[in-house]
Amino acid sequence: MAKGGEVKLIGGWPSPFVMRPRIALNLKGLEYEFLEEKFGAKSELLLRSNPVHKKIPVLLHADRPVCESLVIVQYIDEAWPSSGPSILPSDPYDRATARFWAAYIDEKWFPSMSGIARAQGEEAKKAAIDQVVEGLSLLEDAFGKISKGKPFFGGDTIGFLDIALGCFLGWVRVTERTQGLKLLDQAKVPGLAKWAERFCADSAVKGVMPETEKLAEFAKLIMAKFRAPPPQ
Amino acid sequence: MADEVILQDFWSSMFGMRCRIALAEKGVKYEYKEEDLRKKSDLLLQMNPIHKKIPVLVHNGKPVCESLIILQYIDETWPDKCSLLPSDPYQRAQARFWADYFYKKFSDLGRKICTTKGEEQEVAKKELIDSLKLLEGELGDKPFFGGEKLGLVDLAIVPFYTYFLAYETCGNFSIEVECPNFIAWTKRCLEIESVSKSLADPQKVYGFVLHLKKANGIE
Image (cartoon, rainbow over all chains, first blue to last red; front, top):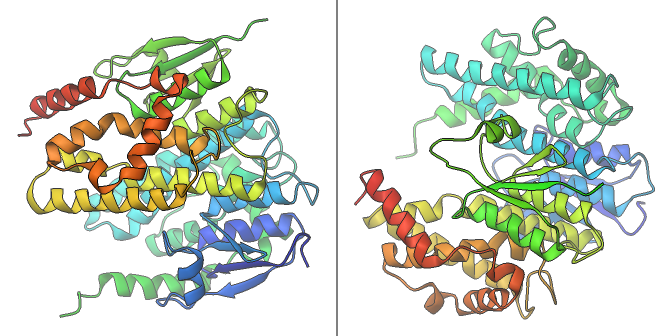
């Protein structure tokens, strides 16, 4: 049992946002109950715990809800400061840098990623892909500056920014497969390509990163739903 | 060695105002640099190459971008005075949640109220009022979102007030009638010097909104 009360996480296995707190809890060596939401139907508990956004993930710590994936990750870091490594860096400037790139990933980069599948027509698709590739190039640069030769953005161990970006690697692989692309190209983004392998192999990540095959099947399901004509 | 602190900003930016309040609360001396947003300076493009936006806080030559990130940076760098976040992790998470909510909800609403008409404008007005009522609920009986004193959420939201005159005039409605507790909270904030001297004049802001509408050919 986690110190300070029972920990539960409301989520779904395919969601990269849900993966974030799961990795953080694993890093801290904390046990928790995973309450899997059924796809397409929101539970009473979810609606009660996150009435504002009605979205997963939601962390319940001694029945008190914490919502928004990166808010949850910071909460986990602060509520269990002496368990496992620190997730956020200690220096205020490094913290600001990590938060900046996490915000960039959520507000610019990930939307451009989901833009690839949603793009209508070859031209739009190419534009969406170019945006993602440009973003990866910026992140490659950031990785070089922030990691300073160490294996992760967080240094020797996985940190906030590793979690913020790494959670999308499953979806990156699905996109590469379905679109016939190489996004994490060793030639173009060597730092990130190697980092991705290390991240996925880490013990805090292995058990919660979905298999590409399973995720690709799930992607087909939601694309079918997305493309389905609206009900009459 | 003395700290060199520069804030690259624009007078009517709600996001810039947040940073001005934080620096004033902390008693940090800084140089205010007004940017011409139609012709961005080399310094801005150098300090924020990714987004090319203000505000940017430059501390001893190192840039910090994105207003909520700047607020947390200011709070962590100058921790001795006027903490913006409580010490309890759960309360901190709640504050971060509500600052994030405000950012997600309100980014586009104001623009829609000022630049659209008819159904689209009515929908935006309703969303604004509903969201302000939700915030009123979160505030409850507390004088400030931060409790007895200003906190991260107060700083994140109060600059938005400078645009209310513009919204109310363009949208022909009264926010005070719909959300009296919210307006009472803004008045309490305005009694604090670091807030009142950091916020732009709502009349000037309204004039600026009209100017932008005209320049963009919006009625």
